[in-house]
Image (cartoon, rainbow over all chains, first blue to last red; front, side, top):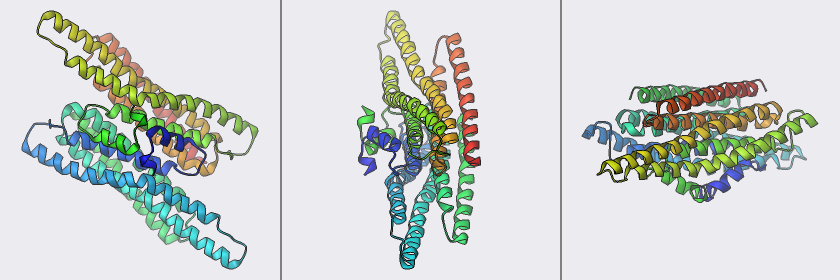
Length: 206
Length: 206
């Protein structure tokens, strides 16, 4: 699995000419790192004011972020596996009309998988940015730069995953399915961008 | 070294309460992944038009990006090492006036190191974004989403590194040195943001 490779080897894999891992896995990785930094700040012994309310809010955020980080980490490999399916479907035989129909059906199935994974990363990144607002509000002031880095990485992960949804949408045969996916991706991405702006504003005022 | 650890273990290290690795190493990692994706697109057999000019421009960009990726990868560990020095300096004895002076000098030296590394990451990320303009211009259209993800990651890496410069600047004793660093960081960051906007515009029009 990609996540069991060394960081150095994963960087080499991103720069190789092989079709995977590509931008989809890179986006999931960026958001997994962002969620990890937020977990760190949520788990620090010191909180904003030292109150029980701070600790309760950060404990809840830390639990949610651990789940999001786990799913984002899974998406690093899932994105590569889904795109490998698309590449494999395009290599299917297309000599007869029957083969052509089977190949087209396989391509469409594989494309839906290659859209589902980055759409999930957009959703998971948006959920992690929501938690960043809690961490920015109740977390220790000395860790504000770590929260700011996390928000920047989650923005990049959400944006990158959105680009991966959009590039695969173009090859979908079903326009109503494509429209629904585009609508959801834009809606979730815009919500995430607003939440990221809110978290950044909290950090500036801290 | 951090880059020899598995991706899974590095994520666990980012979420642990230990002082390092933190946002500085995470920023360097984001930019190293961005540079890697650009290297991949620059090395693809297909180019925008298939011309010799495309290939020459992409070969040159690929060489520059390989050097930038190497230095960004080094910064993942260098940032953690530099911040460990700051933490160590703060633990020095401060019973006598002599000890206090030695401790302050050690803290100031360590802070300059903890500023130099992320300032370098801001510069390296900006240089990689400049190469992204070349890759967006001459690279294969089918890889446009990978270039877009790379630009998003390099923006996040530059922004995150800038936050790490700024948080350490606050503790510097020499105001003229601090002012010079702040001025350069803002200037390079603004240039990088404009170049990233230019690369994104090229990708939208592709």
